Image (tube, helix red, strand yellow):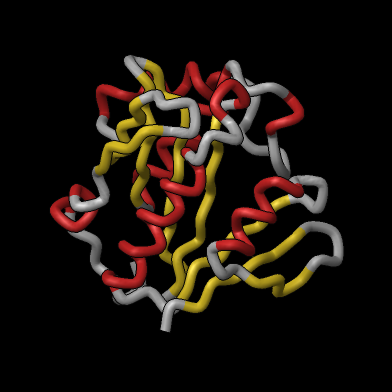
Length: 169
């Protein structure tokens, strides 16, 4: 993890409960092994318009391998509404930065869930000593870019896709 060691205790601090814009209770917590099938289901029902840069993979085997890679090399948080996983954010340490991937199921977008998850992750990354947070999205993902900019991310490159960076120091 390149000098930044993340303990399970640190990740557990990220847990939180809030009410989304529709008043529904959303639980944000670390991803557990028992959540795997529900997370796969969230991604399998994600509409094609909500996929970004070829992610998440479409075949079940590729999806399982991708999730395993994210879990093995970083940490993940999920957002739950009732018994359904509706959001997932993964952070992978890379050269002192945190590379971020986030998806919110289309049935739960525009409700503040992604922003809440990002705020939790940014706070954690700052306290864990990361230099910054990086992410890549597509130019057409205007709503997500608006949230990223609102949280302080800036464009690093936008030749084909939008590379964004949030300095934490």
